[in-house]
Length: 604
Image (cartoon, rainbow, N blue to C red; front, top):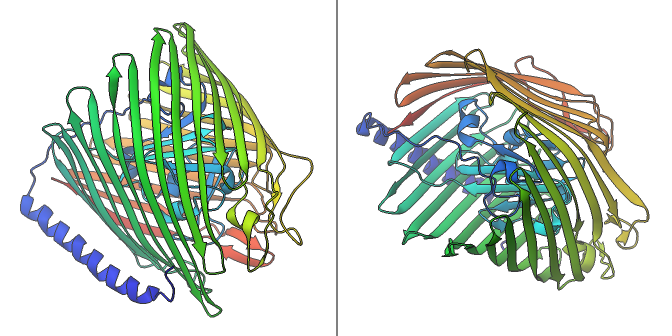
């Protein structure tokens, strides 16, 4: 357990080193001139998250949103939290502060603890360690795949997947070697810079990146800085196999509204082997190690947590017949959690899952899955899912429907207690039944519209703050609503649009009934792009007190000065809308006001 950290000293040292790296990168760019190599930019539309194996979108029976990091960067959307709002059914925000504060992800009217985070094939979140730190200020700069799998996904991913699964992968190197340097500065004394290099050579795919950012934020006492690194190496072994390794690391500091100095040091390493055992049998085996150290220093003392996790999984796709696939896998996961208030617990879980994909017609896909897992802390869980997708090719229409179960396990503190209260070893996991039905319509390959109705029914919700110990609540909690997504191009593909709308009839907490995310981009000339965006929430209550709805508008532009140099600028909240991120019974946290940023991206 690390105690008595000195975050300010760490901040100063890290800032000097990171700025030095940025200047060295810029000098290197200048010295290398304009040796620009084209990179493959064709979007890989295969969906991985739905069944844990790559699938064509038309063969996916679940609701999945796929985001393109390269497109997001061109529109000035650099943070993961901002990007996720472009998916229908999703609200990504922070109820604790501006950039750097712990993030919140509300999928289909559920709370953050009801959705799962998977990065590079390894599960990183559970009921004890939610995904909030990943959402604080993570960037899309080093990501290659971004998928939001919506709906109860217990049969494929286990616990804490009632709302859905956020599935991320570190970028893969493609094409000829190419380097990219990015820098941006602007309001609130903000500065960010990133360097990445990627490519393929003699069967080796490589991607490396490093980044640094700092800001004072708009609201006082929210200074933040962060250094991050990412790596993926993948080597071909013969014609059918690949051996790969990924690494991700982050070192961040955040002044939590003057209440505490928070420091996060986290890393993830995975090693994987994937390929064909036979022409009909594909396999992927993954070994992962994660660690996350968090320290919070305040006038009341130090609070810290240490978390380490190791995971081993093996997934398989066996073609039984041309129209019948057997998917199966086994996994084991061990996590060790400690904190400064007395918790010291080791938690194991292991299990197996199997699914059948049956395609009786070329346009009709069916899916059935089962999963069993054992939690050493409290017992066994079984989950299932059924799904179907039917494509009407003459009208370019796909109808999807699915129903399945999931659960949320009790946390370490719920079971074992802490210095603040006793635990309850007899707690049951929260159980959920979720279903959805939707339609996707394409129009001349230029436009795509999707409309989905969903409902989640949750029993045995855990009240972690009941006196004298946590309890399971009686009754049923429901989240339900409607998702609408649309995107397309017109005017000879010079103008593009996108829309993500979520309407919540019911939610687990008082979430906005309506959430809008929309954008319109205009390719003014072959070199100049201009765009506008809108992010809007209706009235809600995060923290206990009512919060008025608000609408935030943004402008962004980029200009290709040379083949390898692009200038970009953005004006966030250009109407200077006043709004609250949360209001904890009169202690309101204000959102950022109008802000201007400008920068440059150089490739070589």
